[in-house]
Length: 333
Image (tube, rainbow, N blue to C red; front, side, top):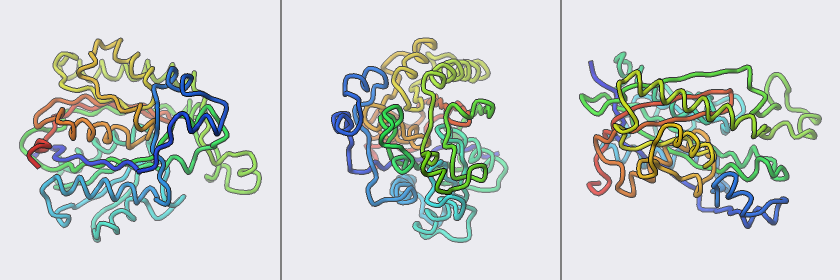
């Protein structure tokens, strides 16, 4: 049976940078306050671009680096909670069209910040069941369209961007294991309460700003740290590994304090940790592939490296993954 392998990675970050000093002019906050509580210094904003535009740019890079022809892609899946359109068509269908892909399955999933981990498991399942050979997975978010820019508790946290990877049937460097979980009973701690079937778009929805992200940060922080730590411990133990065996730990880039708390509990050192939250903020489903891409382009991640991924997001959803990177080294492109 063929194994599912991540054979390439790509990412796209919009050109416009919104730094903490810019936010000081918009809401009652400061660079010192934001940095101390989140580790974020700046984030990217997609002006005159949609989520599908971001995903398309990242996808082109990932396909090019894979060595495949675009026609070799036989499935496209996009993780996003900020789709181009509320209900249909899916952002995956739009990206596929922009890439010139027709007659292949294309669909979205909604798992918020855990989206890329969910994508890995779905792609792994399709490949191991011989339903596909080369799957393009994309985490893309234009969160700036869903932010209340007068709410200082949320507007400081999020940014826009996209990351993509090609998952292919190979004989080595496999996606070793993926763990997924959810708890919908805590959904009100992090959600967009309006414009769905429960609270349809109407003047009242808009007036009460229910079309924007609402979050109870302290409660989310506590649940995230405990859940992420336990999930990583479980996946390592199941696969008879310890943190010493990992080449790189790449967590969801939501908040530096969350990342540091998980690292401390797992005894993962700084050299093994990939941190990009200071550059991009929280880009939800795009954050892990964007972080992988940064480390790849810096020459850190190389063929055969063992990666540990970990994410937690609205839903609540969470997940972790162990995989050996199967792409060629960046300096060999």
